[in-house]
Length: 414
Length: 119
Image (cartoon, rainbow over the protein chains, first blue to last red):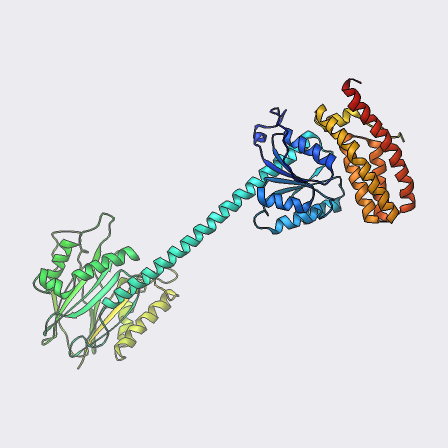
């Protein structure tokens, strides 16, 4: 037997709360016709649409087809009893959240425990008053609605998380690709010109770094070199740095400025890269080495990371007070000049290495960098640079830097 | 201890939420279904079938609840327990009580259907 009750709902709901007026579809499963007819009529009178089934197997078919909001099922039935029906519903992912009231005259704690353990949500006595039926049905409907909302929200969250993970993987892949591209723009270690050795180590704080450097031949007699630092780090800083790096390409500078004279390069860069509305800016050190005379001219826009390390003579920082790019359109960045000797080493470094902070917050400092370089004066250039990184990491007590860390070394051979 | 009443109209009406038409429908349904349940009880007794007796008595007990016939309910409930414990000798005796009581309930319900609520 499986039919839908046709009795018209009565509009009076006595003292029931307004929220009770929401009609629901209820599946009533009971093999005994007098009880089923009575309960169906009472539920219909409360305003609900009632579906009926005479045993558990029929009820499963109706439940799958109609997806009722609530199921009221008798405990003892032929074919499939109430607790077995509850277990079957709970195993079905499409029905498992339907609220189930087990209808019984059983009121022994052990039987109640068994019913709950096997999947019932609550109990309803066959002799329950109208008020009790209303209360239990409405509590069940409310709970069922909340469970469905929770499932929907949970499902939406899972979808969103999946989407986010996919997007994040795509973004990571993009970042890796961009990082590989930026890395390809960095000068290859080795010999950029006769009598010169180049080595460097670079560890961006994130996948993409905002500190970049370059070493390139200008002509047969000149080598251009620079190190730049974009304020901030991450993707935005890297994009801005790549833009300045493009500007600093030898062909571009010669086209725009006509010379790689450091003060003129900085003057043009200062004009083209003003302080951004967000307060972002660059510091930049530019040098030009005249290879026949080993004369290095250089200028700095707020960048303090250039050191000459010399055998038998004191090291020297190649900086003077100056403002970063874009702060003052009328700024002048005067050239300095130094004559280099064979075995001299020029180090260009980002502030990420010498500002590496110890656990107590004390920066490693340029002085300790200089000491590390001098202690490794006779080691191969790359060994000296690696030693600096090792010392900075040891100082800060961790391997990753909070800012981009770069050290470039240029050594003049004997 | 007082003997429970055969049929309590006021309580039956309460259980039908005051719906007189519904109670008449239930009464007719009970008149039609209960003989089948009692027949199932007798058949189970004849077979000495514990589960069959328990199920048939349980079904009869359930059908009695909405029409509020306490004496018949008690006998049906007793029969269900005896069936669960396989006490067939006593169950035969209780079955005779059920027969007597059922006849009284049927008579009361037929009166209700024939005379309506004014009788």
